Length: 366
Image 1 (cartoon, helix red, strand yellow):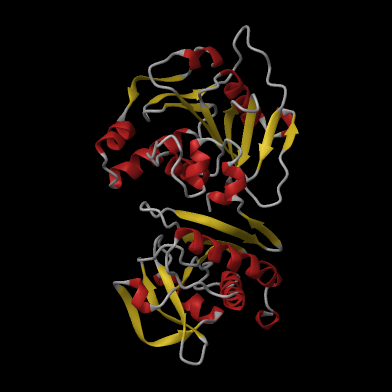
Image 2 (cartoon, one colour):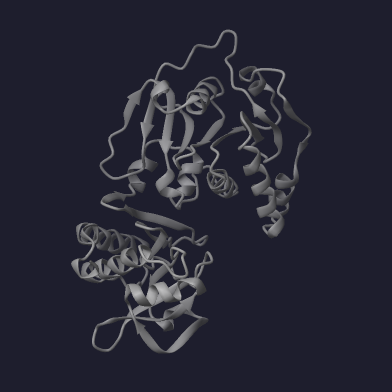
């Protein structure tokens, strides 16, 4: 089967090459960009490796197209190995932890070889990551000083999704979506706290809702059914204290995982925008005079995706409907909803459109 190739690799390779060349040109930096044929080869190897097993486990690997000289401090093998599913499957247990990439580069006769492993990835370096069997993400580190990773495309079986960063940014998207796209938001708010919270929410698999409300105001209480079974008094401020002190050690992960775990409880977690937990298990209601949300504009940050206006009942279950209602009333808030099936939706109010926007962002969280 591996000799037949993976058809989406061929279909998407040229577009991905164009994406990388355009971004290298815009950034004004020197970067080695793989051509379409090389991109197809890298994707093919990653895809077929993803369907194999090593000691009963599916491999999770990341391939980076860069030379050993461009990787800085790295682990080098004396004899570079052929880029094949068999090689990648055998190496997978050693490099499955986040942030470790297998370096791939052509040898003297142009054949791609695995030369070792590295944690150092230069800006706009092509990376293809195996998330699970048949699910690949193509990404790169951005050229900005923060160097956040930005997803370029998601390939799942026969399905291809190419991220449309420019179109999404033009839609007045919330700051969190801007961060997921790999950019710093225009507001200058760079506390990258919601991303690990979102990943933690998604990881526990129970589904959940997180409401982010302005600190120092009680307006959000009008859209919650009282009494709340788990009101936090005083507010749990551990995460907020770590953010304000600039500490991002193991305690930061523990704090985000603790809050992410609270979203598994029936009801929503209410979090201030200073990252203090105010309540969990909160049931979203409606203010006495507030209107029901009548429609929501659904967007997905994917190329050629057409935004569609739907009744909020069509978004999913009760979590989605109540989150849309909350943002419709509390327009300076944000709502994050994780579904049990892995879908993830961000709800925000659009001043320009005067309506709730729902961004389906699971492709950006992989």
